[in-house]
View 1 (cartoon, rainbow, N blue to C red):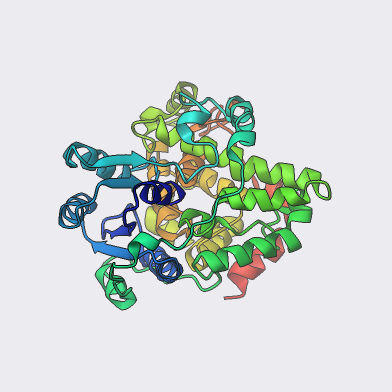
View 2: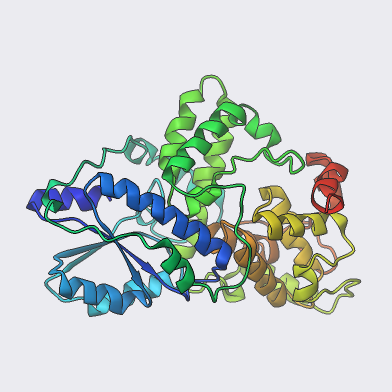
Length: 418
């Protein structure tokens, strides 16, 4: 947006925001569309105050954008960054079909350090990308210049944001109830940021895995939908570095290094959700143990309905379906158990992605793809002690959960309270 306005002001031309609402967007359910559309309503109101109209186009983005470009004599299209399909394919199609006299640019507003600058290749692990990201933070981790009222737009009309029309348009999406604990929109994102730095940042390194007391940042919904940038969040967090040094450093590791490692993987990997993209050592060890006895094998339906023998896993699945979230540590345990209880790793990966993307409010994201690939296929990890089913892929157990949080309290909260 900053680049778009700078370009428009340079040539003294109008600036508009266009959003394409597609029914076939990833594995979005009604839960995701509800948060997205209500957030867009808030964004539209903020843009209107800056004299910038927002147009919502319904349907396949490529023909819609091309039609809009032609009908409005557009000279440049500035696209955001998301290294996942279908967005990648849409952008590639647009690149092939856009008129030669119309500029098409992509700006990585998703990451602090643009993915193509952070590294020129797919990175092996956090330890290999960490120094590359940190060496660029002085250049890219800076305050945002403000978006100002766009005077060249004064003759433009401002379309109404028809929220009921947009929600009806996507009514055929998977019927998952919207979340109530998080309110979409940039204003609410900033309020949640302040709540985090004042209430939980000071203990983050020690308590972020305490699933029973929900002491994570809880900012991922606003990150995922673009209502709050990680850049603004990190700039706010480092104001507390003298007071909470350890906690701020761990937060930067998770919100910047690990998050941008996920973006790196998806950006440089042709099929990020495919076992063919997994490290060879993990593929081979899982193949070696494919015929190991599996005491429990659950169908996707049984997993979705939290019908396993494991009370921790069932509670986590209930939290996911009900609230659309779970702590990072528990999400790792959750996906590891799907591997343990599946007939083969391919099924485990497929089912973990389906469940994560259908229910998690921050699903359909590079973090989710990498999280499932890490759990099932050892992505960004190393070999561990060999054991049945997992081979040398990392194993997780109830013992580990017990070290991080009160299991009984967590289960009570998400199963027994029903």
